[in-house]
Image (cartoon, rainbow, N blue to C red; front, side):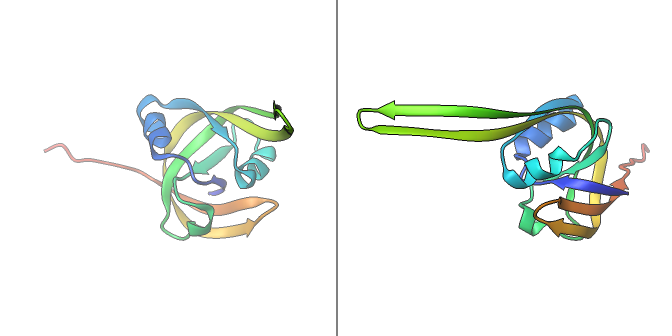
Length: 130
């Protein structure tokens, strides 16, 4: 199944998502925000702790359903004696629901503007009770 890939997710965040099944994740990296802009509610997305340049066949991660999306701009001002600074930061938040585990079969697109799109194979974990 073809999915957008969001990269650089902290391992504790992925662990918590695996444990609880749902979590709101905040993104600040430009490459992830570019991908999130085009994501629809209930779209499946692949999350991994790997850096964007390290995504290749065999990369493991988590498949999620997007439950809610919020993109906002924060304006921050700072001043002291003779220095005045201000900047804006874009933040994206996704409320996610765990769907399962996955592995990258093939990276389809890795252009900066559209983010990473990959063919993801869902992994089914099965155990035999003997």
